[in-house]
Every structure is written in structure tokens, then in C-alpha cells.
Image 1 (cartoon, rainbow, N blue to C red):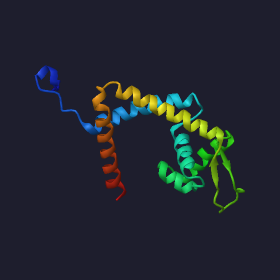
Image 2 (tube, rainbow, N blue to C red):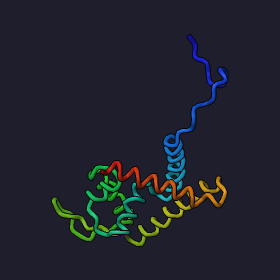
Image 3 (cartoon, helix red, strand yellow):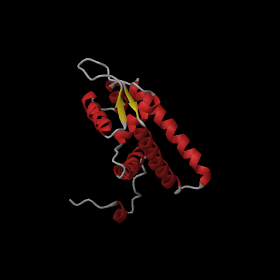
Image 4 (cartoon, rainbow, N blue to C red):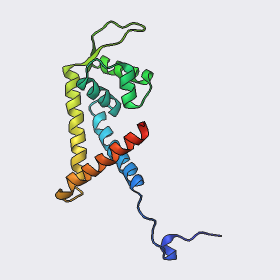
Length: 155
């Protein structure tokens, strides 16, 4: 038996799901920001690592990986790329079992600034769809939902 669509049956479409809309919008914004970052030779993972290191120089691979939600091995590969590009500088000699002390260089600081510009542009394009008086309201609501979800998921 063939199923009839909501349009042909006269039924109302299903209500919008906030979770689905946030995921779909997040994907669109992420793709947009990633494309802009790629033009700078960056990814969101690079930007995340640089941002965390800029705020707290000397973070361990494990801590950076935990914050990014990736494995330590994956973060090591990301940091190796950043080191090769001159964005990050190792302040300790490499060696098995040694903690690597990494710091963001001037090149890395410029990349962080480019990343912030990409995010600011994405914010502007996203919020331009709303009346100006709703900008802070949307941002505040999303922040509240994010903090609540993070607490629930991290215990």
C-alpha cells in the first residue's frame, strides 16, 4: 500500500525539531567556516589547537586532544602540521615520555586572527537573517542550551 504525503492527505507537516535545526544549521555554518579556513591553510582542528595553546601555552597533547574530542595521536599529527608551518614552536626537545612544551608563534597568532575573522563573518551572516533586537537573545539561548548539554554529557 502506498503512503500518502502530508500534502496530499491534508495533514500538517511535523513540527520543527530544535535539535535537528541546530544540527543542520551547525553543519551549514561549519562547512562555510571550514571553506574559508582552507583558503588560509587551516582547519577547525588547527584553529582549535592554536586557540587553546594561545590561551594556555604548554598544554599537553592529551589535554588538547581531550578538548578537541580527538585521540592524542590525531592531535599529535595536527600539532606536527602546525609546527611544520611555523605556527607552533616546540620549547622542549622531543623524546619518548617527555612533555612537549608548545607555544603559538607570530605566524600562529596571525592564523588565530584569521580564524576569528572567519567566525565573525559566519556570525554576521547568521544573525543578519534576524532582526537586530533578536541577535543577543539567540546567542544567549544557544549559550544556555550549550552549557546545559555540556554539563549533562560530562557529568
